[in-house]
Every structure is written in C-alpha cells, then in structure tokens.
Amino acid sequence: MNKKLINWIGLLGVAALISYAAAIIFSPLAFPGYNWMEQAASDLSADSAPSRHLWSRLAAIYESGSVVCATCIAIFVSERKISTHLFRLGIYLFTIMSWISKVGYQMFALSDAGKDIAGVQEVMHMVVTVFVVLLSIVSLVLLIIAGCKDKKVRGIGIWAAVALALMFVGPVGMMAFPPEYFGVFERFSTFAAVGYNAVLGIYLFDGFRKAQADNKGCYTSENEKWY
View 1 (cartoon, one colour):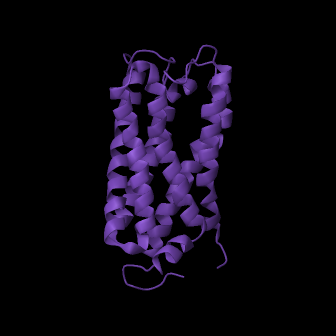
View 2 (cartoon, helix red, strand yellow; view 1 turned 135 degrees about the vertical axis):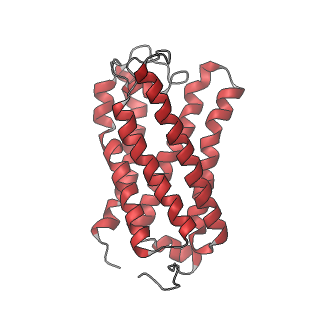
View 3 (cartoon, rainbow, N blue to C red; view 1 turned 90 degrees about the horizontal axis):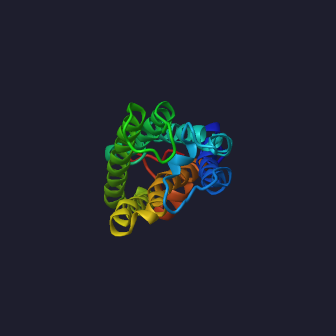
C-alpha cells in the first residue's frame, strides 16, 4: 500500500519519544546539582532552570511532534471508522490529553525548579497535571476494554495495558519508596504516555497493517475493509 502523508506523520510519534528521551538524559548536564533520582523531570524546563535552554532545543520535536501525531491518529481512526465507538473514544481522549499537556505545560511551566507548590503558576501546573493523568488513565482503560472486545485492535489494547501499568508504577513507587527516589518513579509515568503515543504512531505509519496481520484483517464498524 502506498503511504499517504498522514501515515508518514506517524513517525513523529517515534521522533517525539527520542526527542523526549534526549531531553531527559542530557538536560541535567546543564543543571548543576540536579538529582534526577530525586527531582521531577519538569524541573528541567522550569522558567528559572539553567537547563531550560538546552531542554527547549532537545525537546522541540517532542513538544510539537507528539500532539501532531496524536491528532493525525484521531483523524485517521475517525475517517476510517476503525473498530468500535469505544475504541475511537479512547483515541479521542488520548488526543485531548496530548493537547492539554502541550498547551497547559507551556502556559503554566514551573517558575522555579524544585520550588514548593505555592504560587498561581505552580498550582495551575498541578491542575494541568491532574487533567493529564486522569485523561491518560481513562483513555487507556477504554482502549484496553475495546481491545478485549474487538480482536481486530487487541494489539493496541495490549500496549495500552502496558502503558497503564507503567503509569501506575509511578505513584505506587513514590508512596512505597523514600522521597529520594521520586524522580525515578515519576519518569515511569511520563514515559508511559510518550511511549504509547509512539506505538500508535507506528500503527499509523503502517496504515494499521500490523493490526491487520496480527488480527487477520482490520475492519470498520460496518465490517468493510478500509484498504
């Protein structure tokens, strides 16, 4: 099958994951005294963080590419009527989460790295985080259920289960281990969403061919092949 532009945009999901990983790994080099095991990843992009400039460069593809990829995935599954309404709703909510993350964290970036949550900027940053977490959980749960009910998208449901498990490793680890390991477990949660977006991007790039091969054909809700 000849790939269309929307399929190629799926690669932005993978590029966004690489960009985010590079920012997480290398930005601390520009932040003297930063302890990645203890501090949150968002401290690296705080307004006053010495690593902010390097973070902005390394995470440039992530900050724009992830939301573009998620949007194209939502458009693709909507136009092709892939799987069930429940599956498509899960994709839509995941896309909304990506937009809230993109816009919200840019509008309400932490003003100071490691600062206590006291000012309006920090409070709104936490509000955005709550919406991002809730939408991530709800969307992944819906995709898991859709995968259980429809074998044609079961692979995507399995990946959603993996992402959800990693997402819960974060808060569980934060409660079970000392604060000195907060940063370690926080990264499980952040990488879960970025990684799942990359997985969906690969499905989009392949025109969901992988789903067809795994599930012996991918059909619309009207039981017609879409390619």
